[in-house]
Figure 1: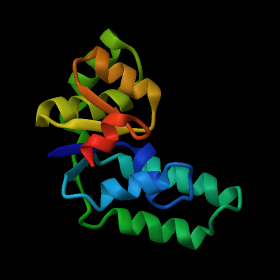
Figure 2: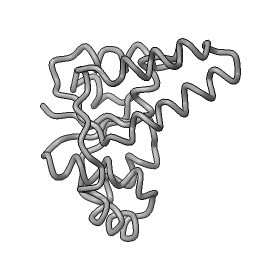
Figure 3: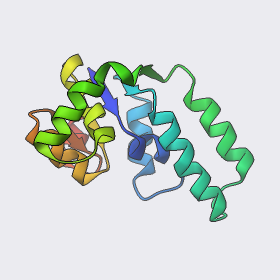
Length: 142
């Protein structure tokens, strides 16, 4: 199955957060993981914030961003989704950034896995399948 992962999931692969073990299970699953190319920037920003708080070192943040560029996630050019994402966000709420994840999932016949409740709600309004990391549906997916 194709799974669109957002930055809230990918950041958990590198930070010790409440649901990091669940996110790690998705990373190690047989599912094909995809994301828009800007997701790396979102994760890099989350890692920078963690480094500034002293949770990780700057070198760890840099290494994590490099690992994210590896083969585990297939990144797609977000520009191809922008027009539809703008329309989706205008009609259903949320940000254009979140809508890109939603449109990417709809175009691939994929599900979105997220730890962002607002993204999940917007996805549902847009007729996309969204699975929250801590939900029973996630347990079924894995």
